[in-house]
Image 1 (cartoon, rainbow over the protein chains, first blue to last red):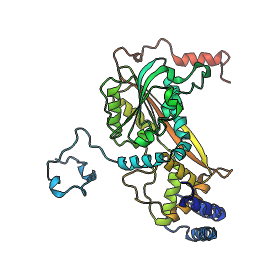
Image 2 (cartoon, helix red, strand yellow):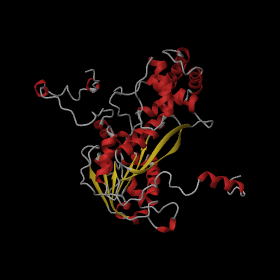
Image 3 (cartoon, one colour):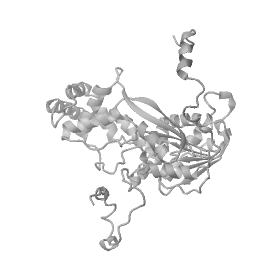
Length: 59
Length: 355
């Protein structure tokens, strides 16, 4: 749709700025991906989310 | 009398929309095995219509369908015959017809592949997608007839109509594959081929696993985000069961690199290939899950150059409608010499092409 950024594009742009936190989170899941339970990597995820929220606000 | 009935597991279809009085009738069941509904045809139809509504976006993501259709046409050209009337079942945007107007990759000078096809009928349930390219110049180079199907699972054709039936990347959305294949067999002329390609096996396993892991961590459970797909070994049995002869099944893996998980999802959406499983969670994926899935995808499957691979496994199947005049495989034990001896002699006498 011209003249309008889709929400997913905004989202993708903000997430792209947090690749470091994303990779830390990914490594945490990867460490034992046969045994993943709820909030296994909560601290890493919260850092990632914080970074994403900051990046999303800036624009 | 402890026979096991599957009726309890069949979801009550559209019960909520039907007034109670209308429901009081004899329980009827289609003959043969009851069909389980997995995919929502209405949802799929809507996704295709919406995707095709924006023609440019939709054409941008034709890369996969064009490639699959082109490879399918090569397989059709391997049969040295003339095809007066061909059916393209589940035509999407008539990708097969467009690919037929290009020359074969092996013989560029031989002219367009469509010389061997007199007429092609393209049938699909989504009218917008089917007619998306009807103004393009390739339509003049091939005798193409477009037909909108009311449901993707019923073929409104007479028996023995077509000299070949093709199907490219649409059979993975069909609930009752045995019935559709049996109908295909029915509309084919005797001794005519069915050549199809469908998504199968481990298609998009990267997306599937990362979404599963992300949901597991964020929400403590998984839901369906990618369709259940047929496997290679299922397809052989399926073709045999529906009465095809001389089967050939092979697979092709196409790995596409994407910059991020969102481009992959956007492309799938623009293809009209979003999730249409009936038991899917309605509504969008949570942002938290998406955020987590991106990180996991990159760590678990990402390439060194920062791209994310997405595997599409295409299963090609060829089956022939039986006919008394058809060439048959020789009977067991009628071989005149042993292949083992032949191969051993080959190895001893210089080895041929082997090292």
